[in-house]
Image (cartoon, rainbow, N blue to C red):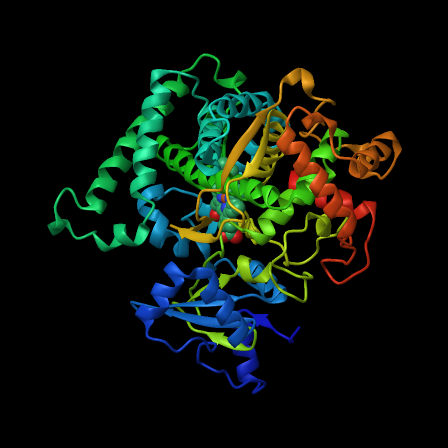
Length: 545
Ligand code: HEM
């Protein structure tokens, strides 16, 4: 890996005064096409464009977009670490996010704030997602998932992503907003759907901001839909403040209303409203799309699928965690995070001028050949028992801006994936995994992850109890005992659970044969020897804490 450095402006100044460096006040190299062409490639062919830039320009390159916007992409884990650890006064995430998300989320959103205001909001929100609280939501998530699966057609192709969106939206409504099944929930859902559908194309939105385009331009419709949503949420907040059981409730909204900052101040209604909208939009589509990617990848990798089913049947969750991590590595939903450079700063030997946006690039870093053998391949094995140090894997961003819902998202995925695999036998509707398509700021499966339910598995036909997915299993993570032996037995044989489905049995037979002929991956994703159970615990912590 090339040597690199990153330093704050004061160090830069000291270096310059001491004559140690001659600052290069030029942006890192990057493609030289016209800005409009680069914008088109970035919007329409994002992965091909990123792969090309990375091959041609290395660890740091500049993408030049219209209106003088320069994005400096960083793909070296050491530099990514330096950006995440840099001064939040100089590298401002809130300012960078506000450009696109501000109009939707509102001025108090934790995503668009910087400095002390950001830290205050973060501290107020964080306790609501504490591990103990989340465990109370497990049964709700399971029920929501089962109800959604019951609606899927049997024997006909359908896209999984909308189903996953419905699950994650219902989960947010129940566990974040604390809204039950009611007409009010339907109305809220309708308003959310309107904002989401108009907001799918942020560029079109921004391009139609001119009031002279009239009340039916996308921007004007978006503002009306956003205001209607804020109004519905403001109603919920007012009612909840006076709910007699406020202190006993386990939802996030109630927790936000009870939270106090260091001065003992509560959030205002406007602040709570902006945070609810933030949690809704940051948490709903991201988790749904990650789930859709997980199934798309699993169904196109029968060997992995059969091993996962076998291990779940054996009561183990270790391979499930590895599958989730590998999905988030090879198909990150958010390709990069942004930091607006407020003052000239040095990164990787370049002096980056004020006004530039620095982007730790999740997609490219997580596909580095020096970190991952055969990086485009889907191989959860690489995460089984691996220690994660550094920034070779950061689907949830990093530093003081790391995703506030990371634990919640992985908790939800750990429940939804086994729930689906225990309820239905699925096969892919296409021969190849879905292509990556850009939708707004996310990378999504181009066909919505189409699949077919080949059989429904009756609860009585399930062979083994579900593993406890909400808490770490010490017997597994400390590397021993009956459960581990069970896990290996399960690994050698396809699960009997699916015996009702001929298609699935065939799939599993084929998968097992393929598994025997495919050499098991035994390299270390991080270039070091396999490290054992202490690291397994570490991986578990990364997912669960
Ligand atoms: C698989 C699902 C998810 C992914 C991949 C994801 C990814 C991200 C990323 C990349 C960031 C930016 C971090 C940075 O700038 O360094 C972020 C921020 C954030 N996410 Fe998530 N997220 C997911 C789910 C959730 C959920 C479920 C919630 C809440 C319900 C949530 C709430 C937030 C919030 C509030 C922030 C802003 C944090 C801050 O600025 O301090 N996310 N997320």
